[in-house]
Image 1 (cartoon, rainbow, N blue to C red):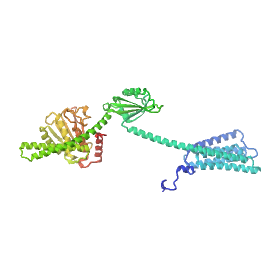
Image 2 (tube, helix red, strand yellow):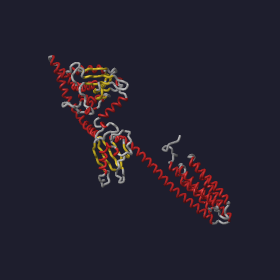
Image 3 (cartoon, rainbow, N blue to C red):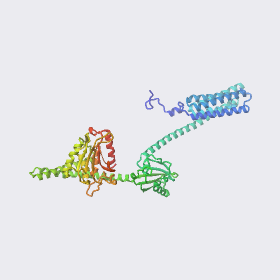
Image 4 (cartoon, one colour):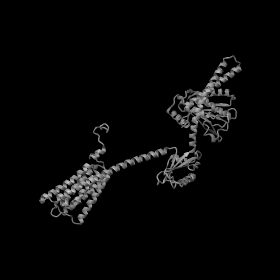
Length: 590
């Protein structure tokens, strides 16, 4: 098994291996260019030899012009075959490279020998393998190819000098030509090394830039803030989903490449953008910011204009002086106001919890006084009054504990309840305590399986819902209905509270569960909020929804939807996810 670079003492850095001549990275483009240059040089030399006389050094050549022409023809054919292989076959890089250099050295040597040695014009053919090796191969192999050419030239010059009986100028010329080859190899190798480093650096920077662009695109797409990148002509260069939704378009609409002034509903935004664009640029060169608030555009294409809220647009000019792109940030003013409201409610929630804690002391004193009073001999009427004091004191104490528990987010102590029996018992207690005539509140349906819920929480939820229903109902028999629905495969078990009153106005339905929202002068605005908090704490949800349609009329009411599987006495993973989703909607300070 191969060892890693950290553990193996023989592991070598790949860049050092390449510098030492141990690694050759395939450079197919350079190999193809070298092959095409070889073909061009061979074809030119062959055409020149056929059209004109072959240059031969008189008296010292070992071959005839015909033989030189034949060698050039063979070289041309081999060059074409090698070029076709380099272009069409992207395998065995080192084998192809070795064959090409061998053909170059062999043909150049034969041509030099046949044409008269170093003084022949064919000596320049050695430049082809020397230059190719300097660009493609590491330093060691590149100088090895050059040394082969130099040794061949020196040997040929030496043998010719011996045959001619004089160590003349040819030997000097061969040495000078060999030194030039070594110099060319060193220079090309230096340039190739620097070029490769720059190429590697550019590739790494390109990868980093591509990764950064992908990260930026991911971040922008997940932003709750709308982002538009536009030019001076209002043509959109980039955008995210939030921007399309804010502008009243479909989430998957194609906005990039289109101009904002093509949409009549965006005339206010386009006008504000052009006015900002014509404003002076800051002298210090810093990004210029400006804010505009305008109503939400009509959702002509999406069809959900009622869900849009007023927007705040911020225009930003990049610091680059020649940048032709500008950024528009869009924010939902309702969301900003809701965040501010959450911060205020967080402080008020802590204050409410503190007040509830202080109420427990007088409640305890009232309860103790009632208990002492019950020990005295009393008339039946007085004893009944003392019992009412004790019951309501206990109820208020439980309510304070529930408020504190909600503030601390303590987990509820749920019990398995028979929903039908629990509701009927509670209705009798409510009728007795509130003096509601018999028959006004009707209990219908059944849930079948038991549900896991904190009994005190469910009592408080039913009290808040039914108390509101009795207040706004007509008072006729059956004007308030508590309907229990069986759990189905597609939906959860539900307890509906309905009345024959006017119902909640459509304009107020989005705010009825907010704390301190009330339509009564003497109301606290905490009833529905606490009821919903109790539902969330028990893994259920409280909604105001459509119950049914009768005669073209819609009947709406409050529904407590229990989590599926709660009758088994445990919280499933789906239940926990639902609780977390609901908590994210109402968590203070979020």
